Image 1 (cartoon, rainbow, N blue to C red):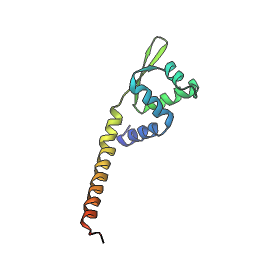
Image 2 (cartoon, rainbow, N blue to C red):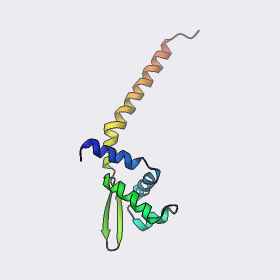
Image 3 (cartoon, rainbow, N blue to C red):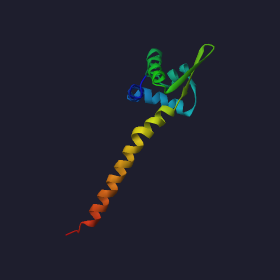
Image 4 (cartoon, helix red, strand yellow):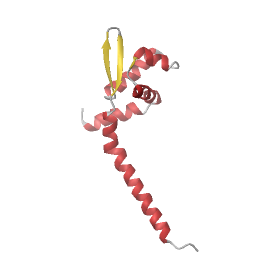
Length: 111
C-alpha cells in the first residue's frame, strides 16, 4: 500500500463517529471486543466488528487473540504521522496568517 493509499485508509477510518468513539475508548486502555460492545449499546456486535476491521486495516488498532477473547489496542503512530504531515504544518500556516493579519490591523490607523 502506498503512502497516499495508507493516508486515505486512515482518513476513511477517522471519518466515522463510531470509529472515533472506539478509538477514544481504546485510548484509555486495551479492551476486548465484548467490552467495546457493552460500552456502545446502540451498536450490535456485528457492526462493532465491522468498524474494528476498518480501524485494523488502517493500522489504527492492533488486535490480539487470547483464547476466545479478542483484545484491541490503539496504535496512535499513524495518527501522529498524519499530524506531522498534515495537521501540524497547516496549523502553523494558519497561526502565521493570523499573526500577520493582527500585525496589519494594528498598523492601520483607526479613524
